[in-house]
Amino acid sequence: RDLKRKNEDLTTKNARLAQCNDNLSQRLKGQIRDLKRKNEDLTNENVQLARCNDNLNQRLKGEIQDLKRKNEDLTNENVELAQCNDNLRQSHLTAMLEERANIQRETKRRKL
View 1 (cartoon, rainbow, N blue to C red):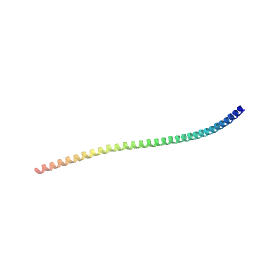
View 2: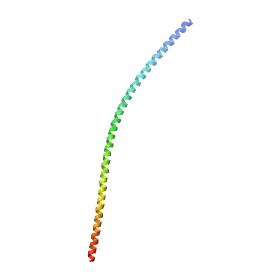
View 3: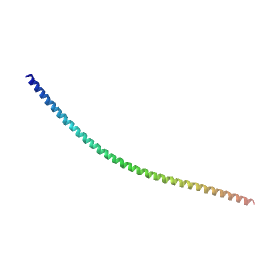
View 4: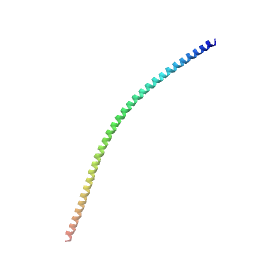
């Protein structure tokens, strides 16, 4: 009789454990499914972000090239303007010297 009751208790306990195992298995399968779905979503998001990064990098490279070209153009323009300034200074200096020479000649002529 004791063995029969003990056997029934163990059978009941085994049935409860089997149910617990089944419940746990179902819950874990659900979590695994959710994690796989989330992993897939994150993978897709990473692909989109990588594409965005590539597009942004290409655009920035283009902008950098444009800025380098513009910088080179401005540098060339500055060189030209500096040359013009030098030429104007030289012309002005020459004109001043000519004016001074004319004044000196005029002064000399008047003294004679």
